Amino acid sequence: MNIVILNNIVNDTSSNSEGEKLFNVLESSIKQNQEVVLNIGPEEALSSSFLNSSIGRILELYGLDKFKSLFKFKGSLNQFERLSKYIKHYSEAHIS
Image 1 (cartoon, rainbow, N blue to C red):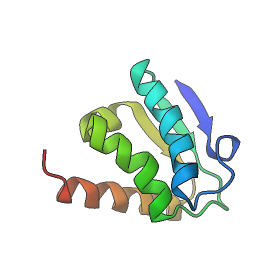
Image 2 (image 1 turned 30 degrees about the vertical axis):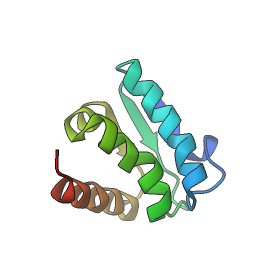
Image 3 (image 1 turned 90 degrees about the vertical axis):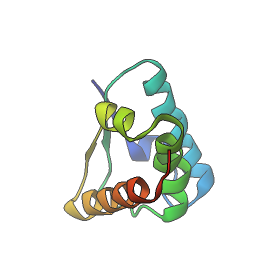
């Protein structure tokens, strides 16, 4: 299992371009079928733009089941709830 520290990858969590950096790391892990724990620092607020360009794009390309099988999150309760809500809304709205 690989531990990825978010603030070692991105400068901030507010833009699409920074979300693409996380996407590249996550996609590389998928291609290697490697489990990842994404460690999110307590000061990092995750914008919709950032999530759409990273997590949303992974979900769109690889699906929810693959996502759940490889990725775990470590962070504050607030961040966990934000990610859970984002993923739940995606799965409810997405049509395969």
